[in-house]
Amino acid sequence: MTKTKKYLFVLSVITLTFSSCKKEKITLPSVEEPAPPKTRVYYIAAVEQVWDYAPTGMDMFMGTPFDMNDSVYAVNLPTGITPRIGRKNIKARFVEYTDTTFTTPKIVSSEWQHLGMLGPVIRANVGDSVIVYFKNNTTINTSIHAHGLLYDVNSEGAVYNNGAISGASIAPNGKYMYKYFAREGSGPGTNQGSSIVWLYHSHVAMDESDLYAGLMGAIIVSKKGMGDDNAKPKDVDREFVTLFMVLNENSSSYLAQNITAYCPGFTNPNPDDFAESNKKHTINGMFMGNLPGLIMNKGERVRWYILALGNEVDLHTPHWHGNTVTFNGTNTDVLELLPAAMLTADMRPDNVGTWGFHCHVTDHMLAGMTALYKVQ
Ligand SMILES: [Cu+2]
Image (cartoon, rainbow, N blue to C red; front, top):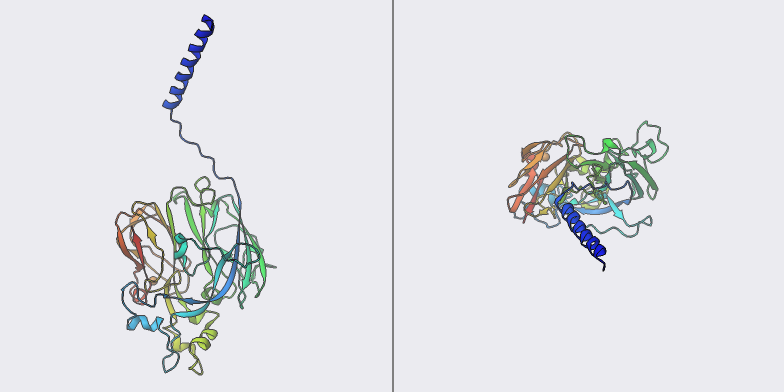
């Protein structure tokens, strides 16, 4: 190596070392590109099944067998003066499948076991399109009506004088493709966090008998840049969706079928005989502490999406024991719900244990609108 070459070599090494040192010292804010807009495809069928409101056969909230009050709603009395349908009912639910053949249901992961009766969560980032391939595998007319997302009248999925020529009411065995777009207004507003929740449900009959059959679910929309590739909010570790509703089986499309199936010894059925016992006070279609899967770790960033549907009895005050939530910049442990309310609250659980999560309306609590959640 000549003297000059040696000099240049040393100089370049110094320069490289210096520049790499310089690079280390400067910490630029990480600029993350928002996930590119996607078309998210779901295959959802409405299916009939026998639903059990309390599969353990116990009042898990109290840790006891059904008491006198629980029995009104939970125990089947097939004959006698006061027949009761009990905890099992024929219902319709939205179930997610793997493709348009609607033969293989998608496996519900452990973190979403708590959805209970609810259909699959439909997700989008603002700017995404959503396509739902829908099949009606029930014996009643059904639809999907989405809140919050942008749709044209033929993807509105609702029966009324709206000029729809398709999509409003899908007959048994019918198929339909619903198309949506997550516009700015579908995502969180300036006072909201990185994601918000919307309802979707069947919207065929004005008395909502198709909805009372059990056809409902949640949509989660993340802010542009705040949702990951799967549209899950990046600043949240765990999400829960809970829907509070007095599922009145007297208002369901399947009332007559349920009377025939579960009270065969009862002639001249009069729905009034079931007026109270058919009001199932549920969280995600489960009562008396039977909802599984509300499990989280201490210190996680937990987001609760809280929904309600139903009638004038459906004013609920979900209450968490043991931990608090932040809702619209306010700390609380009780939220206020009215039918079709859609709220998003954040929890940073700091209190380990198994805690109550229930509606604080006394009558509803007594009727079993209760669950347990676990911080581990
Ligand atoms: Cu309530």
